[in-house]
Length: 593
Image 1 (cartoon, rainbow, N blue to C red):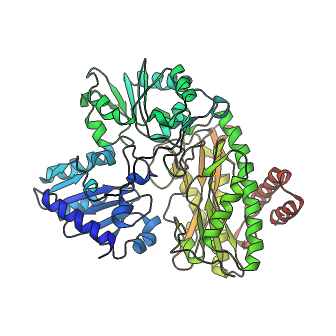
Image 2 (image 1 turned 135 degrees about the horizontal axis):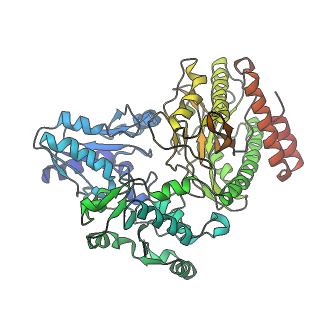
Image 3 (image 1 turned 90 degrees about the horizontal axis):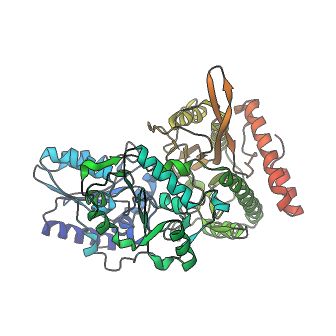
């Protein structure tokens, strides 16, 4: 019996002892984060699945992982001999396991989960759906602590403040904006659990979560006071004094639950139910004095100020220089036949590390050759590492965390001869990118409209892809940040001026190849007509797009013109920072077609 089967067996034994019929294990922490510290990587520990999205459900008769199409192939491979089966979600992020539980379990069954690891919205869906079916819900059960003997401790990485010269706004000003918001919404206080919101609000960064420069913390803000729950040992005295000067009172990280439980019941608290864990929510003294809505900081930080956008443009130059050096190196190494996926990850990191203000990758680099590129979230490991061959396609999806911005970019390049299917697919994905990048749209448009327009070039050929077209990106913060997204969901967030979002159409053929081309764009005003105000996008990312794979007859002149103009912009921006050999190489890559 392998390690995962032993853990599943041990879990079921504890469930029997405690008379639990179904146990739910979400991919989350008490901050409802997408990317997790090792201490909270519960799904990976129990099942072996390492994707960033999914939910495990265990009964005595069945153990399943509910996840979306980005991870179908990966999950099928990682779950082998684990005792868990893949359950394919029909709708990304939907808690479809709730319906399965209602159909599978008998009346009187007990469903349990750890309320510290599940959002208020999801917990309420479980309760509201299963309780009327005469099921018992226990939301205060952590079964893993009984079997996870070598569980990693909570991270203790150093935290630091970044100055207003970088962020464009100081903490006091940001707190004032939050206070004005909660007063307008008839609240007296605001509880914040999400790490990126807290990092933005207090201009604080750290390394508690891999690739995301955030710090484990909670915040509670009233009209007069601001409390930051954090391990003070992570901060230098200068940072502590700076926060205190801005009116911030520091409290121990672990005190948040008692603090909330002992609050004055007269408080009316504004809470984001999507980003607050259920256990913390249930400790608020008066449920009827809770106002639910999206954290105001989520919207504030999505709209970048002039200082942030200026720094981001400079960061794109740095990142583009690193990528140019990398792809030139890659092409040279192809001739020697010495490349593999893991060595590519290391070399790209080295090139980025040479750039001023670079801190870390913004996510685990996706370096995928051939069939591996058909897995949208593939990450090379020692077991999966593939040598780069002399034909076919290589996909690189990567990004950097700089103290002056966050990058995320995807390119596909040939490794040798390619076939007609590969070049057609590549050209249509590029066409989709250009369509999405060049659209003009009425003010107050939503992300699903951008998503549909971007996909049309693929839909015209009956092609599609299973992931969203774009996600919001933070400023030296999380590479995935809302509230805006470009995907088919009915997300009500309006695309506003100065939001940074990715555009990343793709096409995946299992066992053959995968193609995705991605840039980050800044939404901007595009003018006014008698029909109202319109918006468009400024492309921020700066890296050549391979032209050798293009079938020109599949593109219109407007697509070719956009590509030629973009390549001129790339060359003009990057060439001053390259040596003569690198400039000549880039000039060839960006020549007009």
